[in-house]
Length: 278
Image (cartoon, rainbow, N blue to C red):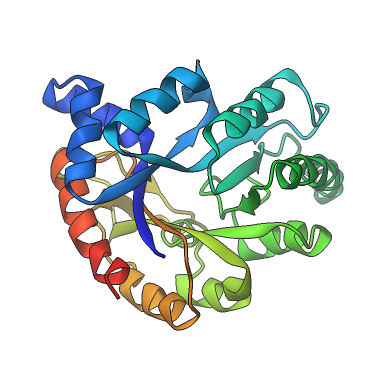
């Protein structure tokens, strides 16, 4: 079954923008057909209390993500916190994200990548032991070892158990067209971050006021957040292909930086419902 999810951080920001209590934002999401939230472990203080709040709103936890340090032990305090939260909240997937490169040389980065792969492999084993699915996404930061398809494939080839959380909007950051990345990763996709983006040739204050916080791509274009189906990313074509594959999982609407969280979520949920009702 395909279900609509969104990010817990979006609902917290929605509540701030509207002057609502967080519980009202959770209820609003559920009324729109959102069934679950993706959440970063840094936003989890008390997993049991959070679970009760979400349960009251009728929401599940679709995914927990956390960024790890490739030079730290796999079961350091920060990573253990994320895994313990996962054991309480029972998300479908858990996504350990390798931290950023510190060196500039190819040799130095190769060594950093190998250390990060070793930590990721150990974390994947811990996630599998919890009965959950370990995933990796394309991360839109120039210093991320997984900002490109090639970077992701290095981890996926080294760790066969690792699956893909496919982010529809992040490959454009590094200059890769999303359909070029989709086909090599298609068979391992278990979770989808449905991120549309308005791709504009330049950054302007008027665009920021209208759309929200933009992100500069490596080719100089500026990527602005927008509701699913209202930007330049072919999300519909990707979801059509996943439906053909029999994909069952969460379609998570993502729009960090949106200046209008309430409307962006409403339009995104309506758009994604076309693929949950098939």
